[in-house]
Length: 321
Image 1 (cartoon, rainbow, N blue to C red):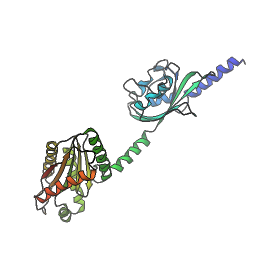
Image 2: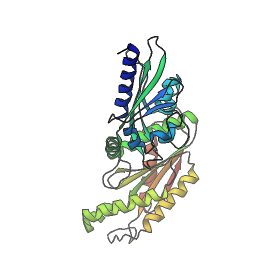
Image 3: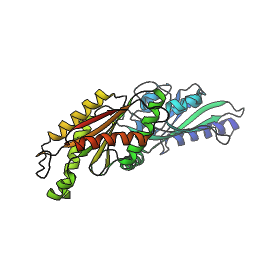
Image 4: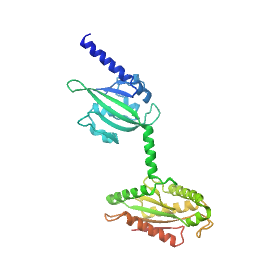
């Protein structure tokens, strides 16, 4: 057998092997056109090889709009685009010329959204010139969803589903730093259920938990901006962080919360304030300077809350600092 024929046979074997790999794989030539789209890739993407071979339309398998896949970045030597396209990735090292990344893909033809681990590597000729790029895919959706669920649990209060104290502390730190940098206003509301100990003593802790959940939903429903954070601060106390909100805006939000809770009409026959469950709210709004601290912000809101409670409860006090 001639050397040329041997090379051809080896090449054909390699192509056939790649086409039947159980790992979803496709190969681009040096111009970025698809030359292999294996059967596992067909199953994953819902796109037949005949529809992409010889084209550079492979992006349609993963996205709804044109954008580079990881193999394209290697083909066209656009490693600088990695940061903008992939939140999780590794750049080539001295040991490996390949790339790795993870990414959510829309998968429009398969009609499903998958989180894929992506590996690409170059195929070079004897002179070191790029001949092709191989991209392999692994479906990590189940693992990613589980990780997201665990992360969510770590930042959520188990009873109410609101952000927990840890998440509140982190968010307030971040909001304060941003407001100090931009010189924008920052507001904080602290909200306390009136006479909640008496409520628990009268109706029991199980019904008390139900009350907390209802109040949490009412508060969350009235602080509806995406930039706002509603958290369970502790016990029967809640907090709302409102970036870029002035005192008038905070007053409106606080009053909406107060009225929404009262309108729940949760009976509270031991309350000294109302026959229904009510809340008292204390808020502070300020434009922080570089010396403003989180503790100062909380103390000012807590002082306003104390004033609301000491003057009859079921009321709102807003302090401008």
